Image (cartoon, rainbow, N blue to C red; front, side, top):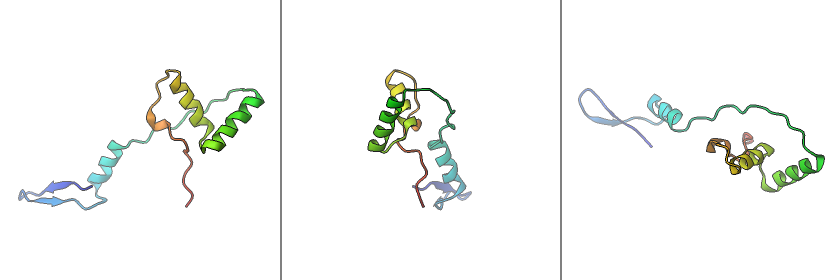
Length: 91
């Protein structure tokens, strides 16, 4: 992807990758979701074990499964929060 810049002479020049324009465009086009708010709930140990097992099998987090379930119940959920694994990739 590149952007076209017009100089004062009217000649189009492609903006080099990594310019401020491209960085600003990415920030607008792909906003990061707000930081999640922590909550604490009490659930039966057997339910916690099931939740942990399903997360392990699917490679996702408990937060993801809970948010997905809430979305399934009709709660408004921004798709940006429906990432199965929010952990940072290992370098």
